[in-house]
Length: 200
Image: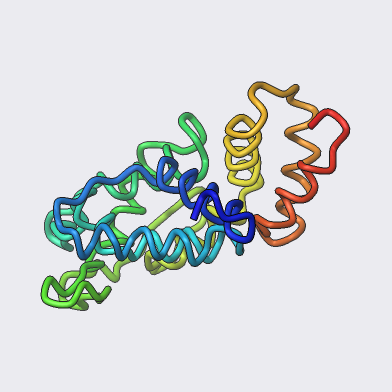
């Protein structure tokens, strides 16, 4: 597919997202399911991609969210969502991680068919404070709040630009990321704008 002119950009971006959303699965069904998820959303909205990957069985298993329960929160998934997938290191607090982990409690999947599910009795429905806001947040709420932060657009834009073009000045990244954020995280629009820049 990478040699097919009609699919090369989607496949290249699938490859990019596969590295961005670092994951390992020894289950071939879950591994293929994740690749297909990345391929489906590779050129769409990053918000849709992030939500789909966050509910992906291979990712939930790899980052131990199957063990993330109300009485014993596991922070692995919540930490990596912010550090590696969206905001980047240093743009969140340890309290944010703890409260996000509580919001993601109960997120799991059916091991028989690889379908995402929420286990209500394992979910912490209590009050949580995340990045200065308080509420009975769910995992979906946490992801939405992360996407509201322009730092997410900057972090993602920087990684995509470096992947295709190497190091670029910060002003260029800021300009592209502002347009990316304004477009509602439209990946195809970001690529088109980058490809049409004179420096590219």
